[in-house]
Length: 114
Length: 320
Image (cartoon, rainbow over all chains, first blue to last red; front, top):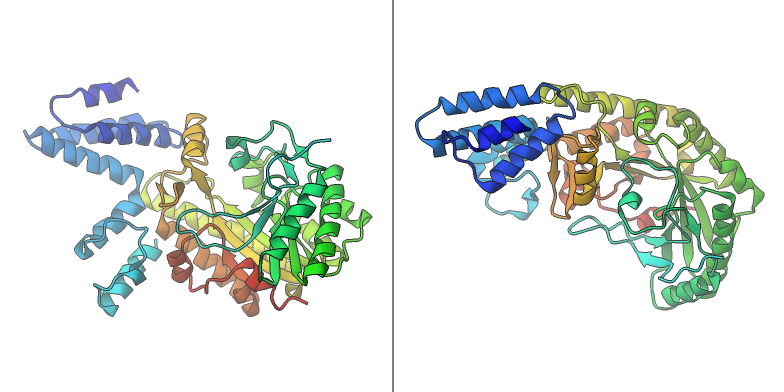
């Protein structure tokens, strides 16, 4: 996990404490299933560093890439749900009164299919 | 003789916003030596070795209190939560004694009781040594069913899938009533960590569990089925942490922390699995739809799957 220290200590990206914990946990979980996960994470880090000269923007890009790596399905669904201002998949859409029937149908389709 | 110092009977609390199936846990024994990798017992304060409690006089007091203070007519008791119900001869002997008590007291208070025994053993023949034909009481034999590759990976000390299905077949002439428990449904193996890999893993899982259901339907008469329970894998934070450290393949990437503090597969995964299994069951036996429950799930997941919320006592109302 030494490569993570290199990433976390880089002056080219900024990551919060909780983001670092998330990235570390992602590495721990995904390494159970992929032996080359450190290589994948390093590639994403390299791409993020080249994004801009702004370490905050680079950090945001990198974190989003790791989030997508960890939760590919959730990431896709949340992206689709952004237009409805929905930020969690575990919501009871029937309890809200702000969406039309057509919107509710679309939201349910996003939430309940792969 | 082991003495239970806390209550034998407790109302099952499922967790924040989880649908309450309205059952009571009876802890006639604690702990289990089957050592399933995901079992919550390994992460709770239970004795290291299985213990059976014989201070039945305390149980009699508790059951009296429960029946006296409740207007409910139907009670559902689960004997397989804190241990495997048929783990040993002692467990079964005590089960019989507890059932005797429940039957007797339920006659006094005019209650109808359903007793769920749940096992991953192949000890069903031991049940035939006793006569479980009690008044006011019906025994429901259930077994947790998993594809054989899941059993080989995570339930190594338990009976095989073939044995469990055989036990369901036999149970129909012993207890009459049986239940199917696909719990926990585990996605394994993971094909790949990317979107397509996870999707393929989920579809493979559905196929495997459909095969299990088919094998069950080949030997079981639907009229003997009390209930079919579906529930995907849940892990507490502690379980998740420990399994991650052990590099267990139970730690699936797309697992998120839900409001009740447990990790579950993400919602699209869960609902896809449940809906496909429900469709498979409906395809084979349309009338079984009303007997399907989701265990440890939220109301919106039941609604996602087109299921009416129901409790275990609800399912027991029209049972003869």
